[in-house]
Each structure stands twice: as structure tokens, then as C-alpha cells.
Length: 286
Image (cartoon, rainbow, N blue to C red; front, side, top):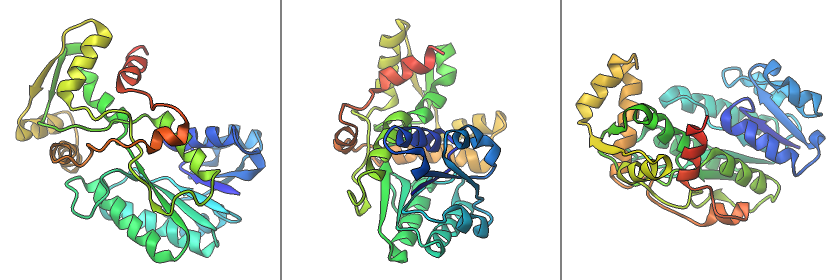
């Protein structure tokens, strides 16, 4: 049985759908905080159990019978994130899970300038220490983040953000398809995968050109000093830790932490990953 955590989220839900294209529903289970969010999956024959990263006992029950567990990383940072992941990994060991796959990120490293990548590195250390077979899916930086940063520019025509570097922006759908492929081809990777990335690494100067081509409108790229960006984020209601977290993405990109482009994602999904222009056009058409 393949158990997926976070099955109500953007990535986890997509992975479940791709798995159901490949294996019978009775081989798929989901662990969700609120089972009501997965009632439609239960109606299709998927095993749905309640599991909270803050309640280790619930996770042991939720992971029962898992030949493989896909641990989708939490939308948290720092100790809160690592503690939740530790609870899940400990529960997986107690539930005698056969293999753990974890959605890590390209650039995962203890010395990363981006807090989430440091959290991923610590989680990978915990997986290594279990002695279980494990795979860390080094996912490319989600293109959804770039689209979020671009939302004001969609209306103003000016991409006003801190200094940055190239990032291999990658679509959720491609990553979900690749994850399902790895889950149904057990043992394909041991430990961290190569970076699972989109087809090109782009800075926001390049993104401005792509936005102009896609819309037929001019876009400018304005570099905003870090301090000004932080103050703007605070003024829009972001807590200070979130403002600092956002700023650290640009610092990490500027130092090349997300610049790698690798063919592994294309090999897993059997086609070229979706280019950023297509993802932008799809998002802005809505």
C-alpha cells in the first residue's frame, strides 16, 4: 500500500490523482488532518485516515500497512517544521513502513540562505538515521511561488522585487507526475534524487521578457533594496519572520542555490517539463 500525507494540499492531492491513474484505489491511502477534505477519495475506494503531525499516535494508525509512505513536507519553518517531520518519521518507523519518500527541495543544505532548505537538510538527516530505505525528492522551486511574486506586476507592469538569481521554476503537475512514477517504480532512487527541475533557470529579468511575450504588454524589472522590500511586506501585514523568509529566497537565488537544471524530471515523466511561459499563461488566463 502507498500512503500519502498532505493529500488535501496542492502537491499531495495531485500525487494521489496521478497514483490512481497507475494503481488500483485499494492500494492507495491518505493521511489527512480532517478526513472530510478527502471524502471524495474515500468514495473512490481510497483508504482515508485521520493523521496529524502534532499527534504521533494518529500518524502510526494512519501509516499502518504502508509499503511506501510519501511524506509531503509541512508548510512550516524552523523547529516547528522539523518537529512535525520528526513525529512523522518516528511514526513511520513504529508502523514498520517499508520505504519513506520525502518531498525535499533542490538546494537542501545546512548552510542554505533559505530556512526551508535548512529544514529539508535536517529532515534528510533524520531519514538517513532511521536505517529504512528512503528517497528525498529534490523538487525544483515551485513556479507557484514566482507567480505569487508576480501578482502585483500583473496589474502594474513592473516587477519590483529584490535582487535575484536564476531559479529553475517547476510546475506542481510535473512534480506530482514524477512522484507517482517514483512511487510505482520502487527503489529507483536511494537517498536524495538529482534536482527535479523545469527546463530553464530564469531570473526575474528573464521573467519580465517572458511576461511581455505572453501578454503583448511591456514589463519592467525594478530591483528593490532588501530593506524596502521587507518594510513593504510588513506594511502589507506579513509578520516579521515571514518577511525575512521571503527575503531569504532572493538571497539564496542570488547565490545560485536554485540555478541547477537537470534532465531527471523529464526522464521520469517522459516529456519536457512545462516551461514557465506556459505556467504563467495558464495562471493569468484564470
